[in-house]
Image (cartoon, rainbow, N blue to C red; front, side, top):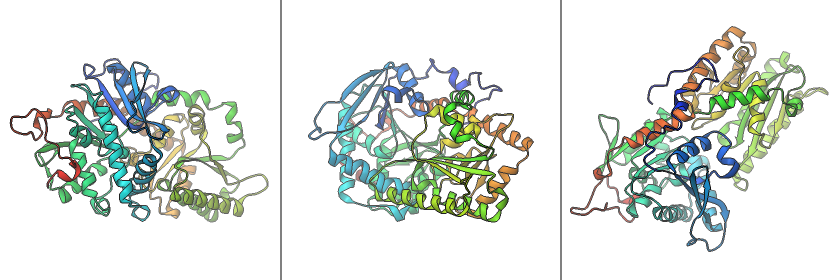
Length: 507
């Protein structure tokens, strides 16, 4: 990870990364973003990653390509739909129901997601689904190849599209192609437990740059590549295998700090929040997708342990859990939904009184501006995933706080954000008693300590914000070796990519 940018003393001041907006380095080259879903309409301006990518796309007259989110029969040969969005083009294709089941619901979310979150017990290996996953990547890549220009920079996002560059190379696309993994990469002994893991991992060597959220993820991949692909680590920290040089770096993703902090100040007293923040209780909050990686039942059991060991907190504090269901229909998600309902019912059943419930539960998303105001009103932020690539809620909680009277962030040691936010109270989410003790510490922390911790956390969140992340990645991608460094057939202008690239790279 490169050195951070100098910070500013006031939110309203422009960060150095933001100052580069409109002066996008590499703007003479068109940016092509590839992701499972494409941000169009309101989603393109809703904040976070979409805004960061849209700004760069707009400045370069770029292209954002991916799945439309729609299903249609017999759409395999249909041309992409195109839409002009804020200076760039959004191009999307539909999937067939069978493709969606095998590529997205199946291999991506029942095999890769649990695998990359260290959950081998939940991994489902289905060869047919894996074949569909590769075939969808192939179809999408062939479609994009017809739209790629010679000097494009192509930036591929996340686990759905690991083979994408290898598929593009088979269509003789020689552009610089980078990949960013938004979720963790596990140790080699976990990744290697899945059949055909080499076929998948070696596809990453078709990229020029592979970015990870944390140094831990980067080191895990380097170890895997050395142990299973015969890769050699160069003095520059790159990986070499079969004549290919792959740059691997950590790029911790950030947030739009100014936007989120402004929304928090403006909405802290919003009338719609009155029912969530009324009364004199101190409030603890958790904001998560309803996912088994988030450690939600473990968190609730720690709350239960707190009320058992410290009865003086009964009626004094209240925990608010916001958990939005995702990937409905997948058994593991139905299981975590049911377990969370049971656990909340158990805690409330044991400790609730006529005028107070220890746990409130919201099972639908809250508008982003209201969420910012709500986070500002909460005394403790609980971000305790069992494993997470980054977890931007941790950074949003920090940005939302009043610097004069800030709340306390409690952060899992297994969240990627823990590498940066060391001034939070770092906890082991599997240790319920330890988490309960951290909640007590946060509730009783003197204001001067809360202010000092928050100031250091805020400096880090501002220094490495979403614009910093975007520019760091694109600078690294544009600085890669030219494509001429690839293996070429003698006397040929095209690269000899094997028909099955993932299997064709020899260790």
